[in-house]
Length: 366
Image (cartoon, rainbow, N blue to C red; front, side, top):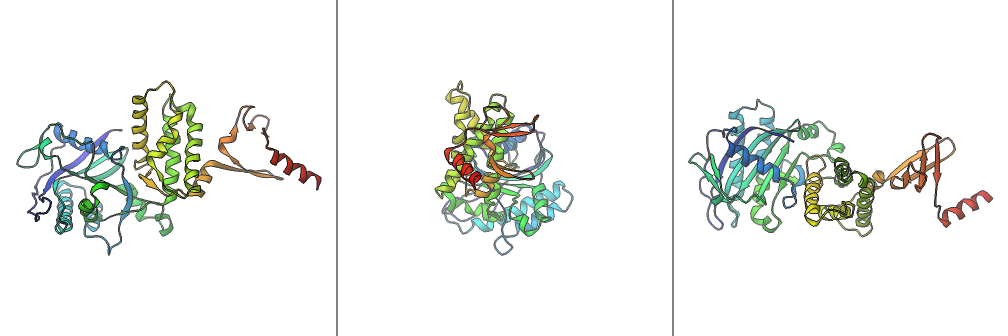
């Protein structure tokens, strides 16, 4: 999916661990997004967001008494013309929030802050990312990228992204519907949360996505991924069955599901001819899809049992009967456990268990 950059800018938060905060380097002009170095840097950061080593956590802005000024400045930006000046104003306000939140964190460190407004898939986003590898990124005196030398962006140190369309949807939703929605996400390393937490707090991020949303996105994402690839399409039903089995196991054992285990649960459905390298490529693609704005599956989540059952079952009824069926048991071939014959308007149950036979027999005797 193509990415069109609207604006981008880099500022610098100057702070070393255990040292006091120094004045930030704030530039007064947006970057020229037509420059190859700018285009490459921003798109590389966007591409990494939500990948295997950069799983995003989804949420919203925190309540008014929990967050600083950034959410209010974002709302102002959202409701005005998106000019270079208004974009720069938003980024400067973000830098002020970052300065305030990092000042009293002893082990906090600064870095280059990349801000970009961009469009992809017909939707608009704001992304903010901290880039620490200073030796790999060449900038001129105005913080304009002039070269990227061995910039290791395999892992984002801290980053946050806001989806404008989902933000508007959330604002227009009722209180109950809002519980199922999120419009921002963020990436932060687990190994250094105490030192890097200021980044999340400064931008007003509050984690939390409904279990039903994560569970639904997990099953829908698996189905979509297998449907989208010719070599996987025939295994789509089996993959859906496997992930549902995994999620039900999480419910029965009272444990969280993880995105890594979700991907692992459908690995047996990959083509047997694939070697490990091929399978890793699919793992990474699937992880990125599940952790995308579309499906919003976080690195770990509580499984919502009702959503699993809703995705796994189908209710059918006629004038004189009704049944709740596992979708995986339905098929249009005669050897299916439950054979649906559309042409003759028949539903045939094959391979009935002894328990089912005995129950029906007893009822017929009544």
